[in-house]
Length: 210
Image 1: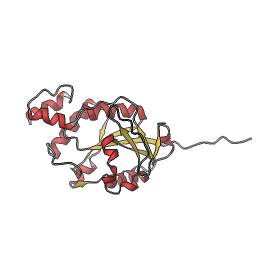
Image 2: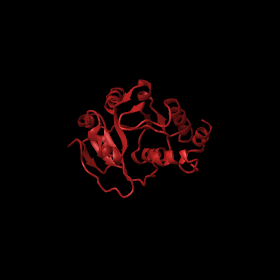
Image 3: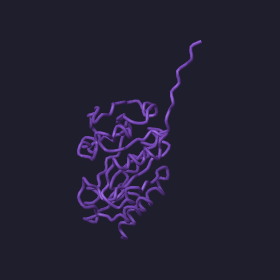
Image 4: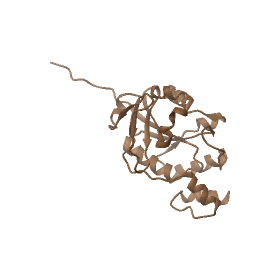
């Protein structure tokens, strides 16, 4: 009698990096939807200390962390990974991925990013090796149609593929994603305009009283 083939399926965890300057509903609602769509056991918001691809931030490290802690009280399905903040220097994703993989050797690791970041990944440190440490999950803006293999990642549209091997796939999220930009929020803060529906009320109160 022929034995049936069996495959080991890996538990998936997600890491959503960014400056979170400030964290807003575009981050939080998209992350919450992705956690469900991918069936992630955990999804971590991973703030950077000093982003190397952006200009100076509007909020301090302590303020950004305060707002993240307020955010996950409302979105309690999300967690915070502060490893890059705790390093207190320029944040390089490849260094974090190496540490994450060493800590989660039996898990499938999903690095979550927007389409803009994915399309410019070749400007990141050691981008050619990312496929050895994670899958990439891309949050595409409305109307974006460029779904392709890049940087050594294989394209898949099947979530279950991300559980069959620990690294190496790129997956474009299917859920309708909320498109809110930090630059829009910065402009509204600068001009004292209403921030409702862009940020949790607890974070709006924090900004208004800081």
